Length: 181
Image 1 (cartoon, rainbow, N blue to C red):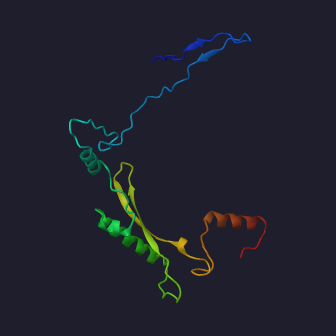
Image 2 (image 1 turned 180 degrees about the vertical axis):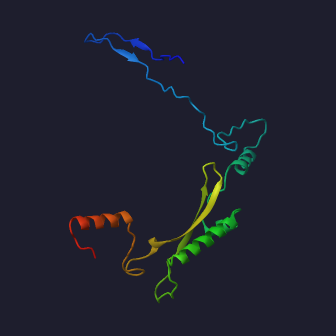
Image 3 (image 1 turned 30 degrees about the vertical axis):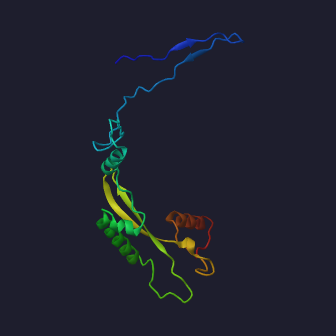
């Protein structure tokens, strides 16, 4: 395979200092370009030519029904009324089972003068590399931002530590001959 030099040298006029300046074209990659293929059902462009009395609303409606995938539901009501309601209900059941098995909460009576903290369901569709839906996920999120300190809670505590932090602490205690409690 013969190598072809595509660089072009252009001699520019001498500058005021009398030095000739040579400008070359930037070097280009010799790597063979491969067109990216996302599959036969991937739409990259939607071109509409207006012919006569063609109604734009009909074209937009056809485009939406043929090409757009339903978005993730924003509320619980949207999830249970959507086409994928069976999968949403299954994801909700899985999340509740997970919360109960991890003993995330303890069911008690609400004390007088307190109000319950509201919550919201978050739904996500997880996709594979080729774009097909792999699984549906649901998370129950507590809206802690509407709590008031001193009324709804008094202090916060989050007992989460990474294992790397524990190892580093033990290593430092060993190096400096410290006592760990």
